[in-house]
Image 1 (cartoon, rainbow, N blue to C red):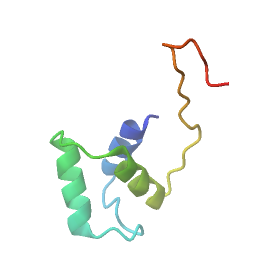
Image 2 (image 1 turned 180 degrees about the vertical axis):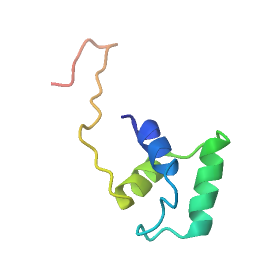
Image 3 (image 1 turned 45 degrees about the vertical axis):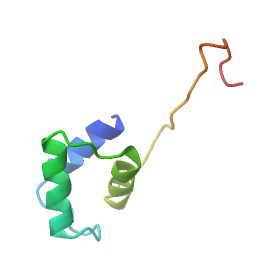
Length: 72
């Protein structure tokens, strides 16, 4: 799953914020903003997902195609 897909998965769960330390008002605000298409930064999504028990299983890998270098 991408970060955005994982975030959508989390927010689709009823009372997802319980046992995360995130209060209901903040959870409701995040859910509404996400469903309305309002920007939520990736670091914020990462923070919420980690708090809710999700874990990154593969980090991003960037390559500079302009210079023909693959990061090695």
